[in-house]
Each structure stands twice: as structure tokens, then as C-alpha cells.
Length: 240
Image (cartoon, rainbow, N blue to C red; front, top):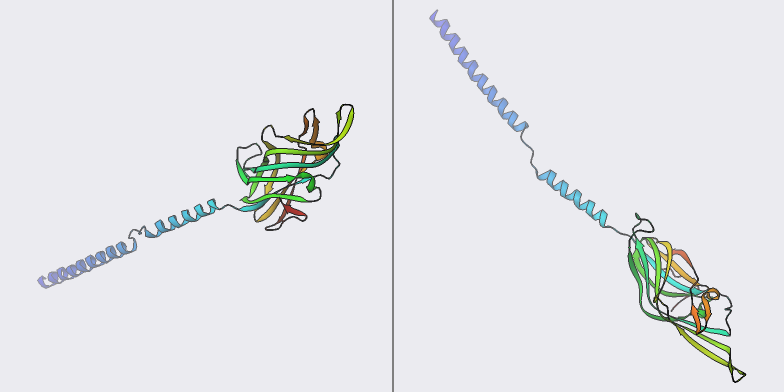
């Protein structure tokens, strides 16, 4: 009887040690398999994504705008013959608004020309006079304005009465623009990577008015828009 009891106790000790070894092994495997992830990977990915998004938002496309003027070919019905109509242009601007806004939205004026150019409108009946061109943001524009320093009319064959005799004379009349600018409301678009030609066509027949002091200009114009390839200029055009 004594020998059998010793054998049972011995076997129980071995089983107890094996159980402890299995438990420790399971704990070690669990710690390895379920360890917490590091934060290096996710942090790097988030920063990269944010940078790409910011770069896309700041991208803006541009197109080339050419502003030109011409004179509708018609005879001017004034007393005498109008030989010259000299216009001195000092500034050209266009009004830009975001495409997401409507025509009445508040925008900003973009400069196309700033300097001084004098042109005889009567020489532009068959030609397009290029005032200037400028690379501008593509999108919607609503107005164009020209700052004008002065306007000069040269008229010959005007009959003057002196002591009941009539003499041919040449009259030069300089007329300023009351507001200092000619502003035209005309919505148009600048197309990205293209040349947009904006032509202001003066109808001299309707624009020149006779007054007690001479002549004055009340502009009647037609504004047209044409899309050209980038770098292309219109035919029959000259720089003024």
C-alpha cells in the first residue's frame, strides 16, 4: 500500500509542472499576437493625404485676354467733315468674379493696361487696334472699363459766318470724359490655356454729338468675344 501512494503523488507532481509550462506558453503567445500597434504608420499616412488635398485646392488655371478697339465703318453725320477722333487711353481693367458667384457678386478689378496710348478711331474702320494683353485667371468677368484722359475732334469744312461772309475753317475741339472713364457692363469668360479676344466696336455715327461748344462723345458700342489658340492674334490687327 505504501508504494502505490508514492507513485500517485509522483505522477501528480509531473502533471502539475506540465500544466504550468503550458499556461506560461499560452501567455507568451497571447502577448505576442495581441501586442498594441505602433502609431508611426497611421501618422505618416494622414500627413501625406492632407498635403495632397491642399495642393489640389490651391491650383488655379489661367488664360490670355486681349483687349482691342475698332470703329464701325459709317459716315459721320456732323456739320463739316470729321477727319480725326483722337482718344487717349490711360488704363484698361476688367471685373473678375468667381465662377461659383452670380453676375452681381462682389469681385475684383484686374489690370490689363496701365500707361498712355493715343489712337485715332477713324483709322480703325478696317483694322482691330490692340490696346494690350494680359495673362489672367480663367473664369467669369462682368465688366470692362477704359480710363480716358481726353478726346479730340478734328473737323474741317465747317462754315463760319464773319461779317456776312462765309469762310472754310478747321475746328479742333477737345472734350474730356466727365467721369474720366468709359465703363461697359458685358459678361464674358476667359478660357483656360486659350486667348480670349474682347473687341470694343465704337459706332461713331451714333456716338458723336454736336453741341453748342463743339462736339462730344457719347459712346455707343458693340462688344464681341472670340476664342483663339494661346499665343494667336486676330487677323487685320495692329498694336496701338
